[in-house]
Length: 292
Image: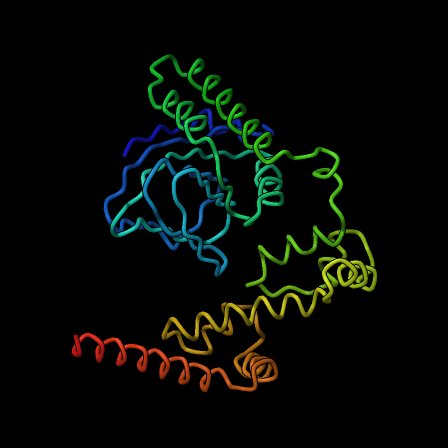
């Protein structure tokens, strides 16, 4: 692994700068190499040079390969892991600053998978980052060069996504609300708080959201939480109380009631059925193996 980090003195500039370089690096991962689950206090973008890997954030799992980039906003817990057969190799660049979160969220808003950007000309991003890793000049010159490269990389990403400044600066209320829910659904969110943040009445927010997406923001949020709950129940042994708490429900009872109203099964019944299906599938596989 190779990495270059800014000096502590220069990092102080990030508190007064719109956008400030933090670090960049390169890593050719071994099979199953993983990072997390952890969070960072700055924005981070990885660019996959070759190979494959898995990126998990907010309950979503993305399978990535060459030409993909994944965005990790500050304060978000995530986990990523190299493929067992074709482990990935990637470069990354990290940045902070007053507007760093805004820029990261604008990129996420216009990407198809929120946290993922696909089909990039990967050399356009690899070469500048390698340039950072080769720098061997005085501190001031290096700091200025790294920040200029960061700006170039951000500019190229905005061009790749064909971001329209008018749309970026004035997204619809419905889109802003949906984007917020997509990112923050595991937390305890109240629609009135989102409406207050966006400067509109909760009733107006509900109307424009329903007009655009055919569902109320409250039900959209509930469906996001329950979809994740199904995944956690089927793929983990986490206690139901922990799942309820991690998805922002008031308590296990409220979670169980909401889950059963949606799927006509309690969380424990759903987990038993999924375990039974998994065991049946395994038995069928073993039977076929023995037959041949």
